Length: 303
Ligand code: NAD
Image 1 (cartoon, protein in one colour):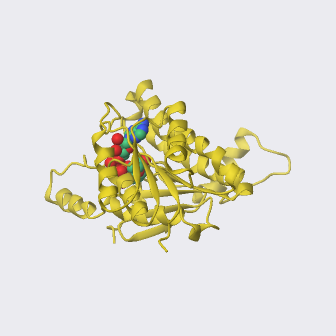
Image 2: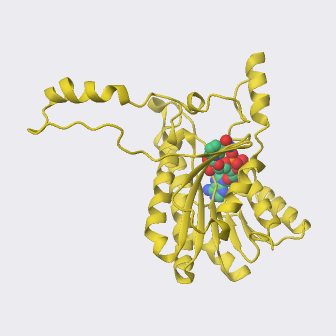
Image 3: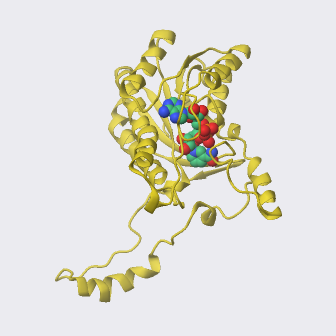
């Protein structure tokens, strides 16, 4: 039997890129899919039914079942509508893949309130909205799986992405806390930190032969490579996997650690600003985290 036979999944941002690959693969493995996509540009402007409809058509052409939803995950009522559409169309909901995303990159000291709000609303609030909408049926049926897309821009850090990094690390925490709150109902929540060539990273400059060669390598990381992990996490085979963060980059899969204390210092009489400077900081400095970006940590080419 196909691994997702009998399951109904809602995949947000499924008209393009990573979400499209996930919706297609989940359908191929037996899931009935609500394909959600607003169809805006990379900054989240505009709306177009085209990308989502194309995915629905492709799933149906391959013999699968899918239905289109073109609402925004950033809207609370619309998010509830997506879950309701799954219930109305297919009679149930078993999995939510929170994948919809936009970028509004800007160096921090020039970032506007609008750029902050737009990214937080689609990523962090969008994940909350859709997850919360599905929580009611998940709780009632004592089962359900969430997969949320996080990013090394939040887990590690990146230039010009204060809004996006904050949203993505927020999603890491959202997923863990959902996993804790809903474990009593056998509901699971995990994150994927994907690396894939898509329009969201398609703007990397290629001015030199070295940059061109690098981009050619990165282009091998097709969005479809992320889909098997998402499909697995939504299946019953992952019934004891929750609260985790997996990285997926081309043919590599990573398990991320979660921040824990790495060093402690204590003084019986407590601390003053002076003793922190003299004692605590020198003791902890060798264990300080480096100011790194994703490329410093993932310093080898995708395998
Ligand atoms: P993409 O732009 O190709 O796809 C994102 C889709 O989300 C688009 O089709 C867009 O129309 C849709 N969308 C945007 N706002 C929406 C909204 N409010 N409601 C519904 N749909 C909306 O991007 P992608 O690279 O496939 O990214 C997918 C996810 O993976 C995002 O959450 C992104 O942050 C994350 N991610 C991607 C990478 C990467 O390397 N591509 C790395 C880290 C994280």
